[in-house]
Length: 208
Image 1 (tube, rainbow, N blue to C red):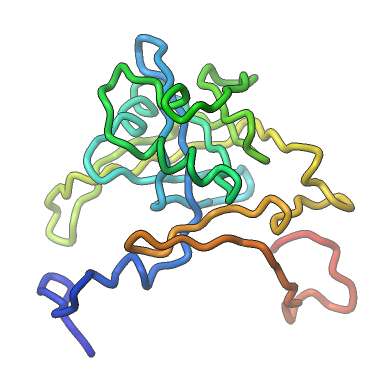
Image 2 (spheres, helix red, strand yellow):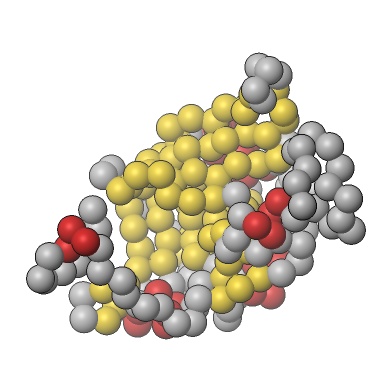
């Protein structure tokens, strides 16, 4: 089948998010101007650069996380995992601005070092970020689409020692969740290695 993106696809459900999958989940924590913590998952999330490390997430409409990241200049990413799937899902609920999702999801916070926003204590890994930009995306005709792209530079990384194996972060052991469209999720429970043509005889563990 083929359809133009601005026209209806003719299917029972929109396939776009299911095709762009699996997508890592950015579990984003922020503080509002009054110091109230906010926590929400974003599946439009990924890494943009490794040197320096830079992350992005986007918010369809200016939700609390994006607004707080813009206004306070910081945010924190914590990895969502299979073990934490229920808490992650609870934190996706739409609640009043003054409600702390850490409380509703019964999650403990842990302090950060470089930023004021907290991180999810039970998460295997978290990254403290300074907001580089928060801009509304424009479509091909230059019209705003009410989706906001937040880019942040990572300034601190927390990793649970339980998930470091032979000097590497053990992704499969951490069992991160990924979004697959609709209400479908996937879990990373197994990884495999593929050498690049440029790796040569010995792989030194450095991504290029």
